[in-house]
Length: 131
Image 1: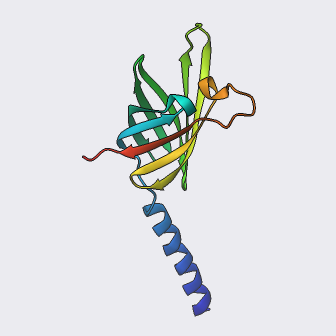
Image 2: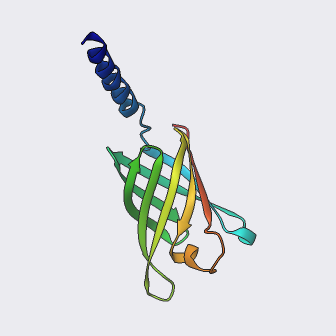
Image 3: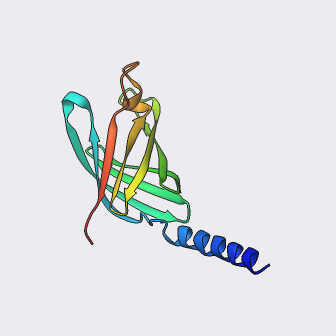
């Protein structure tokens, strides 16, 4: 009986440690998108995280774009809906992973990332700015 109790105690402690180890992404980031021949494009990004939900604001030459998403384990994803230059609404999905507490990376789907048929989706990375 003692072994079973110790086993469940170990599982409980491990589970608590995993939750406590979850990285909080809240802060200011440098967000870099790569578009093949265009080269990298750096933008400012702010993330506010509450539990498994995030609010992301990216500052572009055309102004701010804000979206919402989720964080689960090492996966991060958010969507931003913007007006295209032709006036149509486009949804851009940013999917990625937490590399470590100061680095994220992923790909972009939809919007400008949805063109090109079999072409790989554009990549992005984000580096947390020092406080």
